[in-house]
Image (cartoon, rainbow, N blue to C red; front, top):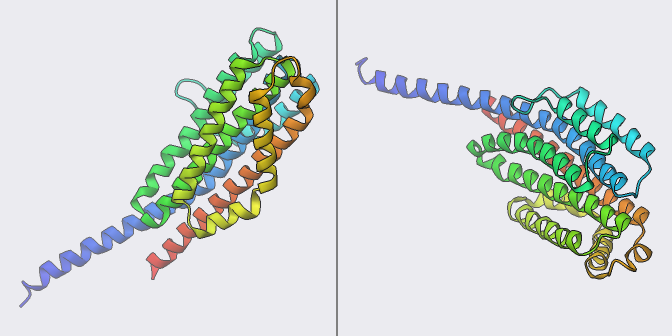
Length: 275
């Protein structure tokens, strides 16, 4: 009579082990959601430093603004422990700043190095998001967050390029780059719409100002169509920087709200697993 009990016991044991493994994985997911906030904070400050650096190098921003932003970046960097393979982020950023201060780097080269560093940070979060694929209830939310982060990064590059266009009166080539970046913003927006649930979409509607989005669309049209002769008189650097920064800050708030949503849903799954 004991023999038929053995397969049932083994099945139950496997089920217990699987449940325990899922609980441990969910604990890891909760940590990843919290760690994402630290990475995002550094990305956000580096995006602003990139824009101000490009503006300084193209003749548009006074250096005191850049110096103040570097202090804010360093505060975020102090809480960050991850490294690019074989190189620390601190060393990369310090080397980049040194070249900028010595005048040994053009604004496009500076934009590229900052963007590569930011991309390495975004890749860290993207790799972590892949781990949510084991939990269908979390996977689409993680994908939505990734899309917002990519949308925000494309908008950050656009802010820097627009500042360079206005400050340097450099027209054609940079305007084409602006167009390609906005296409990227639209593509990531479609991904967000595809993957996000009702709650995340509602957060977007609350946080992101549609009037501001329309104003930026109009400014992009101006940047893409004006000749270099009248570019600076039509769009002020102050107005461009203010509006793009407000929009990027709104995307940052949306990203933080989405991360909080992801963390909360991970905790809900943990609680369900305990019952």
